[in-house]
Amino acid sequence: MNRISYPILTQGATIGVTAPSSGAPVELHKVLTTARDRLESNSYEVLFGETSWTQDKAKSAPAKTRAHEFNKMMSDEQIQIIIPPWGGELLIETLEYIDFDSMKPKWVLGYSDVSLLLLAITLKTGIATAHGTNLVDLRGEYSDDTTAMWESVLSTEAGASIVQHSSEKFQKEWQFDKPTPCVFDLTEQTEWKSVSDENIKVQGRLLGGCIDVVRHLIGTPFGNVSNFSKHYINNESIVWYFENCDMSTTELRRTLVHMKLAGWFKNCSGILFGRSPANTPVGNYVIEDVYNDLFEEIQVPILYDIDCGHVPPQNTFINGCYAEVELTNGKGTVVQYFI
Image (cartoon, helix red, strand yellow):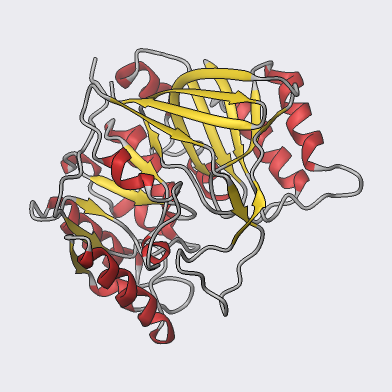
């Protein structure tokens, strides 16, 4: 049996920036250069691919161009980590051109549409990937304590562990015309919750991402959870984490049923849902109904409103690692073991 491969981030690493989904139009180039300057002031070297600077027809470039640039950065021994500018809409177009067979362990960090690529890499290759901050959210004078953990998490050595805690406060809505020194406007008290309304601890191998996009891996060669479970984690239990960007409650419900019928929740020991800017009710079918219906069907602990996704800040979750996630009186603790 193969094992999960964990890359490692070291001091002064070279960061590759490529846009397998969306790049930055001209009017937003400043956010990329600001992020670059912040990272370089912290001793990183930042190398931009051409796709980072372009955006047309909902993508940074044609699919083959995006995939080629990503493949090139993955094979470049100078680059230790790849951080796309942000998410987007059409990363799925690139998957058939990504060279999974030649990949060697290297961190890829991001969320939103990028999580589609992250999950595909881990499922196909057993290389751990990092769901967390994107590049443009590192442009602040400093990072909040939750976001800043990306460096510590990605610097964890194989065989070691790292602890993260839930945030103190989260951002209710984006105010792009009023950026704060840490980018986010953290005003609302964070409270992790559970369907059972009890303190809970779940453990297993972490897998997940933005549910709007990772659902499209079902039934493709890039979403074979059963094969991953057999060949990389010896059929250990899985803790899924999801965050909803745009879907209504009924669309989310359909997606979760689809995942269940496709066998994605086999050996599932718990599900974590991030805070969401969506979860729009349909009739009187609200998000808590979705969580309760899923709990009734699969009978595993379900936590929600965790620090993950489009309502920042967010913890850095490592696809493939073994994790213990604990909810105690509204506060969360995540211990990740790189084993």
